[in-house]
Length: 109
Image (cartoon, rainbow, N blue to C red; front, side, top):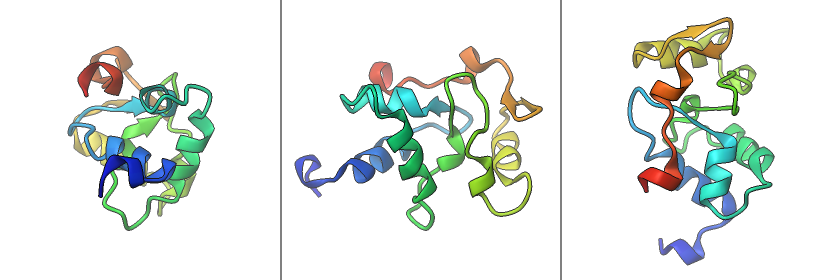
């Protein structure tokens, strides 16, 4: 699909699919990259609706590294387990060393 034919959610999914293994980004960073800086919440809604679209939604967290979307994953700790399986350290629902594992689409894409 050509980028101009994608809706906002599809654009979010295309960015999220490019987040490297073992890295995370934030809802706001994706929104800024897409030219919609005030739409972090819409990015969150997109992540919530991404099931079955092969989108690594577990790699998208809030700006402080909190796993705010974790209640949308099956099981009690699936988001954390997926991140930890990629080597991302999570303590009390928060990414540790966020600056080390943060991937900024505005700089990387």
